[in-house]
Image (cartoon, rainbow, N blue to C red; front, side, top):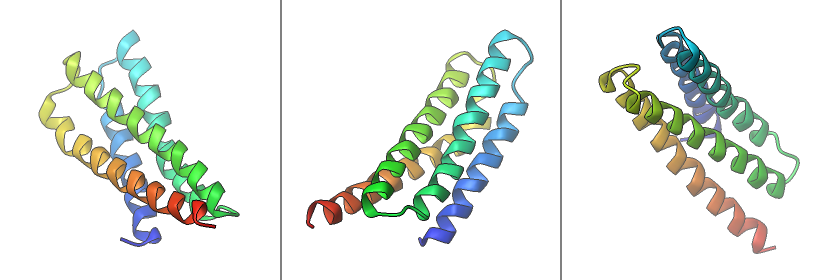
Length: 120
């Protein structure tokens, strides 16, 4: 998967998380989770784009670290929604699987990029 495909995949992930967030019930907890999930999932896409135009490999590695933190937080909020039974597990499972796949991709990318940085 190349950078452009991954940019699109992270953007689609953000869109899907926004739609999921909008399905949450209104109220203190639903409103809080909605804003948190929207913030961190859209941050995945925007920070990956920033990583793609990083000025150096070290900057790329640093920005990927932010992407990893934000995608992990997205996983947390989806798991929390399931735990609190705010939405059915069926509504969340595919998106949560996508988040975990993206996490694995970004962790592998960061490892590879770190090896390049450290070998210089």
